[in-house]
Image (tube, rainbow, N blue to C red; front, side):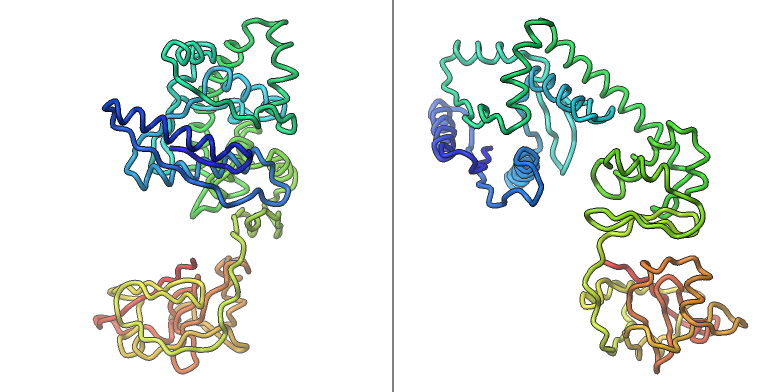
Length: 392
């Protein structure tokens, strides 16, 4: 599998080289297929070319592997690559996870990624190429000093090897030790999160009860699970200093924000476009998922024995936005109160109050987060339905 990044004027020639090599193998009886993908994206504003190329390359490889039924992808990183990665991460003040560098094997995106040469020196690979007369190509961008890894190879690595001949082996071994340490920290974080996370929200008081080192480790693991990427050290430091059990706080992120409310920390993804405000009639008698993309989510209808609405009510509903004067009755015998008061009583923060109101003749029947209005509950023993709102 070949990914053409479009960063070199020789990129087309490199692809032709790969195609021709696979044809030669095919003519000799080897079952080899060549597939290629040309990148059409470019680095985002402020994104390094190296980071963009790495992310786009792995995305392309994963897609090609899945499209062609490949369960295993072999990557050609060798021992010096591992040592360089460890050193670069240390120079960037990376933590234990970053110093782990590259795993020998990992399962991700439905594919197993393996690096069978990770403990082999580059010189052994070059000797194999010479012995079997395999023609290879050196990427000319490897000489570009704008890239951090290239500067390390050209200016630092020769001096390092002169002073410490075993530097490559030692640094690669250090990455292996860091991988073991990172695995232990992940297990510790998973244990700690069991007691301080509920419904994807982190309980601030319980989190602060952890020892300081475990507190930071658990927070990093929770953030990685919610955002899908490692948290910057600056964010973890800010949260450790500013996060409080009381009050409402907000920390912006590239894809949304972190918000604390009533002692809980939640990740709020970037808001979707505001849903349409126009009311629309809807029949919710059918059990299952009813998608409403114009409102940014779906309603799941489930049959219940109690606590639901009668079928005749479910057949004559409307979806609309909140209106002044809307009131909700939280239980039989309790007075209807404004939605704002009911949200506050239920501990639902403002950023989780989106979604349409399901009403019957103008009166709320179902409100996301609050449930079924008691004024519309079906009589015991009758066929009835309940609703669940799922935002996209």
